[in-house]
Length: 321
Length: 235
Image (cartoon, rainbow over all chains, first blue to last red; front, side, top):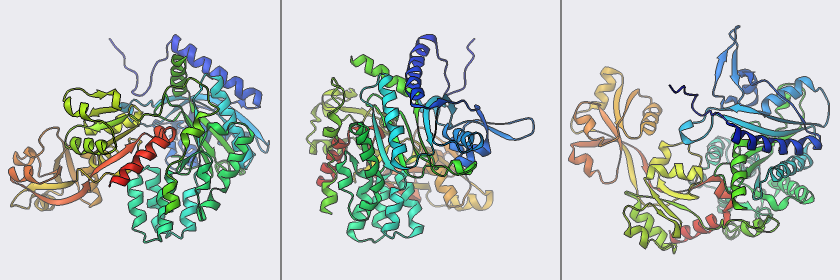
């Protein structure tokens, strides 16, 4: 008789486990010497904690009651629990560097081949604002992936506030903005162009709103942001310069249309890609307001990797050798 | 305008190449998911216009994978799945398919203009089944191959609907009394008319769309942008 396991979960057997363990060890050996001490947080959080971080509770998929009737959720995100931990346990230690490895659970449609339970590993840097912090987090993640055996990985770099800034600068009416931002986060550039055309803006402004999300590539992308967009990409310009200093700029794809699903990001956002995997290997960004929801506000940024996808990329890399 | 037009050719490949490890597999060629069925002919014409040789694809009804030209053929409703997973970098499918699969994480890059169809509510000609059902029974029964689109349409228009999903000829459902109305895609209205059905309400117009995998959209930016540019130029 076959006893099933819940859809979107899986057993890991020794052969796979050995390889997965090797990847986490190499990432740990990169993070720990750089000062990122590892932490554990509970697999279960109060649902309210996840909701404080993201109004959709970061798409938590499994909820239950404890004996007092309080709603618990299997954590769907690692950054929100770490933010809670920082605010409640670390007072004003600054800067603070933390790393973590653990499973998270999210309600995704499992019939599309996506996992509901997935292994995450990542780093969070608290108390360092601006490009200095972001460059450290990105370059350390890139180094960790190289140590884990990846060779073709890249990081996409955008600014979650960029399009909103541009909408304000071009005086797009406030009631028209949410629909445009929704199109952008749905990656529906056809409807975006249609809605922008309906606004009756000047031709330059219209073209800027339609073309900006398509701008991605090397530093030349920043040169192509004209007018109000020029000021809006100042943050990315500084960050790119910092990444050049770190010697990792050739791994970076600047992406003026990049947006992330989670709502706690306040500035720069990142995604990690590898040509062997059709989904992102991970992502992150700056979340300067998240820790303040659990205690004293502190600037912070971080990056999380989906380690099973990193494993797929690493295996593909091995086959190429 | 000029500047922005010129800007859609980022030299991602050249910045990508240097400094990365040698021995990379060729990543430049795009794999294109092509829908068989109603959009097939127009899609192949479009690809011909872009200089992609589709002779082989046209000559082979049963073959699915054409590696030489980077084409994979499939049902239109499978295109978002292949593209989301990166099994194809880009693909062509109907807006109806995309509306019915809102969770597929793909870029919708272009309205290709062809394959125009109307998603409609249709009922038996003559009597007002829709109004009658709603008034007397408080809800309407709807058969469709597009349960999400149908449910959204009725909920957005403030009416309660019982959605019955069918796989085959949906026109049969109201004729046999299974349901009151259907939600389906119609190009000419001919099949509806032949079964004594008439359009009661239009829902949305659906044309063919160009979609892209989110990772390919970054890693193969130059190739995708150049393709989009050429399609825009032919439009």
